[in-house]
Length: 465
Ligand SMILES: Nc1ncnc2c1ncn2[C@@H]1O[C@H](COP(=O)(O)OP(=O)(O)O)[C@@H](O)[C@H]1O
Ligand SMILES: C[C@@](O)(CCOP(=O)(O)OP(=O)(O)O)CC(=O)O
Image 1 (spheres, protein in one colour):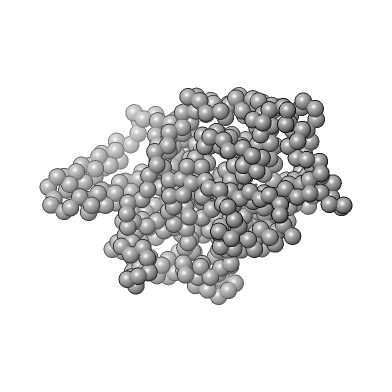
Image 2 (tube, protein in one colour):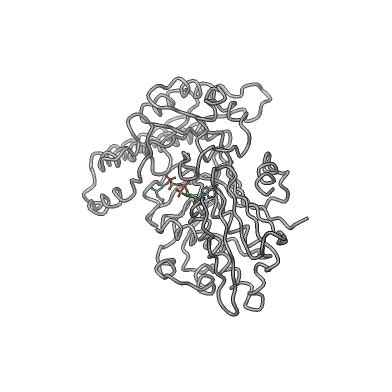
């Protein structure tokens, strides 16, 4: 039996802090999801028709998604990973993860073992799969004539083939590349016998993700893939600048940069949703892809320093916060209702501010169609709050709903959810398809056996065979 390593990392939903979290002055509230990515690695002896020293990576949910690489280590040199041309084209994220992580592993192991990274008599096989929620399941449900409900989603095969290419797939915004990079980097380290400090894993995944994206983002997605739900404050981007700007870097330089140190100023405060509050998500389709608004919003912020900001909206925000406080001090309602009431108010303020920011920039951060949808959902008793996650746009909505019965026992399962689903199903202006993902405390984790995760064995074995 060949040695197998399985590592999984969760997706994310940024509830608050969109755009602001790019600035280390502010924090972002990010919830890790039950939907996860899995990187599975095994070493196989080379056969008569395959020379050794190769890495094959497969993403079996997609058409044309097999990438092959040759790995070489020459005396005293850093390991190199060369893609072999194929009809699948390049996968920059996977290639950079392999190249940089193997270089790091070489540096961590020391030169004495540098030549034996991948034994010339064997090959490395990697399978990458993501839970269905990372990709829109609207068409899969239609093809099976199933209504767009959560119970229909449960009937789909886990890790279902998407019948399209990675480039063409409709993503739902749960952060596939961050979960993929985090699970793959960690699986490689583990497979080569290293169990490094979680902060080193985090820093390395941030570096690889930034390099693959071609920019230093805020990194909340990678951090939550490593550490789970949290209030996130970003690292100073200077920490990666030198490595990012260099065309050639050695494993030792990578190690020197990603080694945990005070220069990494990331701050992570673990959090969880309040008890009996459930996160529900829907993927929203308006028939077009939402372009990135980040460049426009950041320029607007630079051109409009704080002193010039809209005084009226500031006053509205302050007044509503004060009203919340007044209710709090006078009312005899218990502190839980009070806290939920404040939560609702805060989330509404965030929504309002995001909407205004979009209007000021002429970009649809909370488009009017989403505003109408969210307002309709918020009128349902038991819906505590909601909004557009992350950068907004025509991508998704989230709601926090009261979920008094999280199990099936009392048969409530659950009237708030049913009402929300009814609104979504009947919504004409936008196509609204629920996601099955929930909030999950889980962070990065090792999976011992393929059998532990429903459908993983089949997905992986079909790909490996
Ligand atoms: N299942 C997968 N297998 C291999 N690579 C993947 C997979 N899913 C995503 N990727 C990589 O991540 C890239 C998508 O990254 P990006 O557009 O930043 O998406 P996201 O916003 O979901 O993080 C793809 O082009 C591909 O390189
Ligand atoms: C604007 C942002 O602050 C939040 C973007 O959040 P999303 O959750 O929309 O992220 P993607 O996975 O890139 O689609 C940019 C950032 O923090 O990097």
